[in-house]
Length: 226
Image 1 (cartoon, rainbow, N blue to C red):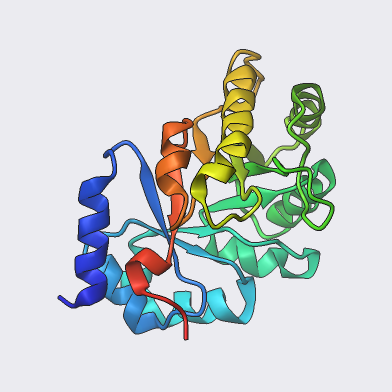
Image 2 (tube, helix red, strand yellow):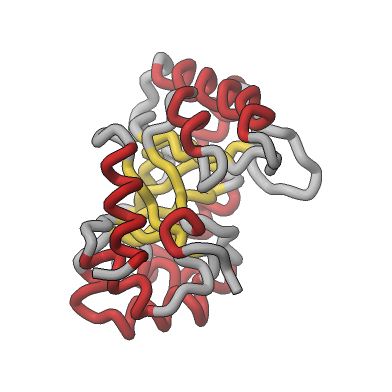
């Protein structure tokens, strides 16, 4: 095992076992991803459907098929078909309209159920997509999406504003965590608030303190990008 494997194992040992680590593998090679899977990683996150994730998934063959793949970047409408052939969880559904597009494509290719997370724009940033952290707005979207046959909402995801000091991100994680708890009490028909995906390499500890049970970590495992 090499440095990547050691980094992953050290990180896994330092994080509560109930928190899922999604290894963020944007720009990483199939060989690097293979090493982290061999070290015990169970979940791989990619930002770009095609060609990056598509090629890696196929090159890794059985090794790649042994783990869960997460789309953690924006999903373009023209990439939905390819995304559905790769990803086990789409974390970035930012609107009911996008959910409808996914549902139609799923039916067209014979996919039964597509698990998704609703993306929350916790900082209300104009440059980012996602639902505002407003319970009534998100609840209404859940009611619309629940009518779809092939979509199952599993929880929420947020990026939040990026800060050098992770403490500056805490208010946004706290807001999303409180929204997560509020939505749990609504008991929608086909949605389950099970997953709260928040926190990256510089902020995962704060995110976990604010209820996150899924973190997306790349540079702490692979090192900085070149």
